[in-house]
Length: 256
Image (cartoon, rainbow, N blue to C red; front, side, top):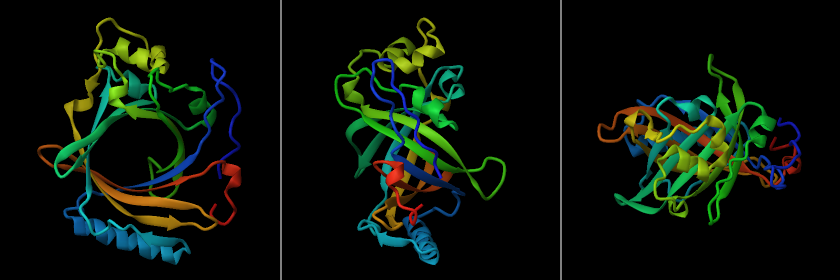
C-alpha cells in the first residue's frame, strides 16, 4: 500500500504534484512474440488469470485488429548524465498505416524509490502550450530474483514536440532552458544530446482490454514488444496495466 502523499510547494508556489497513477509492469521474454496471434494468446492467459483471482476482464474492442506501431528514441549526454542522475528523456512517434501521425511526444521523467525525492524534482517545462503531468507509482519486478516487486515513483511531464520552439533542441543548454530541472546536471559549452546507443526502438503494442478491480477501479492493459528498427531484432516484451485515481485515499479496500 502506498504511504500518504507528501505535502509542499515548488519554488514558484505551485503545490507539489501528487501520485495519480499506479502502473504495474511484467517483463516478458520476447521470443514467443512472433505474430499478432501470439499477442492475443497472451491476452487469453491474462483473462484466465484475472478470472482465477476474482478480477473482472473486458476485452478491448480492437483486440482482433492490427497492433499499434510506435517509434521511440532516448536522448542523453555522451557521458549519460541524465540516466546516471535518474532522468529519462524520451521522444515517441505513433504510426498509422506506415506513416507518422500527430505531434511527436516528448517526455522527461525523474524516477526514484523515495516518493518525496521524486516529488521535489520540478520536471515542468518552460513552454507556452499545455503539458500533461503523469506522476506514477510503478510496480516493477525485483532486479535480483523472480517473484515479488519494487515500487519506483516516476514523475513525468509530456508535451508535443512542436510546442518547444527553440531552434536547436539537441543542445544541452537549450534543453536545460526547456527543462530547468536539468540545470543541476551542469552545462558544458556546445554539448549535444545524442540518441542513446544510436538506436531507434520500434514498439509493437496490442491493447488487450480492461481489468475491473471493483468499486469503479478500472485498468487498461496491453502487451508490447520492443525491437530494433531495421533488423527487427527482438529486445524485450512487456505486459502492463495502469490505474488512474483522483486521491489514493479514495480507493476502496476491495480493489487495493
